[in-house]
Image (cartoon, rainbow, N blue to C red; front, side):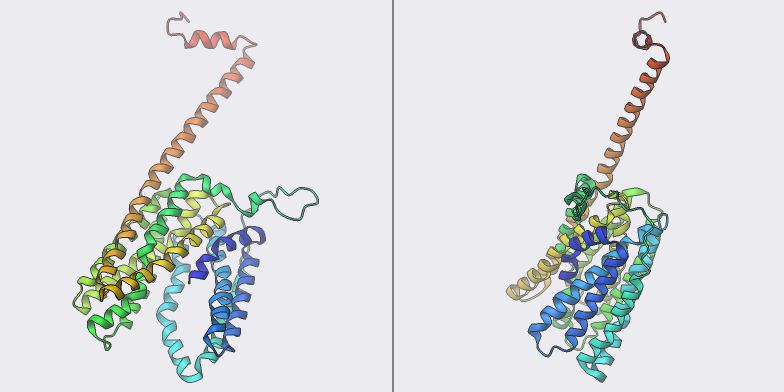
Length: 389
């Protein structure tokens, strides 16, 4: 998972240079090769490369174009469309473990990986349907030069937006505690309720309500104007932070089920409106690298947060403190994101004032031309309060 997000900035560059279709199909092909190669590996060491790097890199190249291409086809219903598309991962989160358990028992690990390669082949076919509709940015290549300019390879325009900079640093800050429950919840349930506890139910609750949340909040996002969609992400971070702190307080298994239902619901909210917010902040021409750099920065807290929680558990003997502390970063990150609507409103107001000023100057020049050179004198008299005219 860390590799999938870590590669995202590079994927965004390839998406801008080669397009969504070539990037997605090529990524699915690399993932197919990595998964097939993993099926012939018999030791763990080589599998770190074939599965952890090759397969994960291919998945990263196949994943991000699927978010970018939606903006080419949808505008008013972009939130709902993202909810529908991302709900697919929730559906497989619920159903695929049962399929994998049956395959592992009947055909073994190697053949299971070969069966899963069929899914990567389907991804290749799906990528062929990614036909871009938005115009490509105008190329500024020098005559005879095959290499694109660095300004096109790395889009620095996205970092000129203060709203995007806040978003790109606020979300990774929130994610330092965001994934801790997903990684350590099962072990915590075993320690508190025993190994016989039906902990798989908790994962199913998260998966089901996450899919429902993506559909619901994706639809809701379409009714929220502009960057105010950020408030939906703020609410999701606050709820997930509070629910993380509630986990150690649940001494009844039913309480954990309620916590997981709410966590899954607002997890779906956070995921489904990521692309719509990116479109609002930087526009359709810059959205690919905006999403890519954000996902790349998300890889750091995704990788660091859970091991820190595990270290605290080893030192203190329980997960209680780890879950309490895991709830703090999402709340802080959500508070930081609240600045974005205010920053964007101030930017829009400033641009409107500059546009009005430029329009007034153009009217003055036009008046001067039409008055045969007497415009300046008339303008001075009109601007003087004591003028008899």
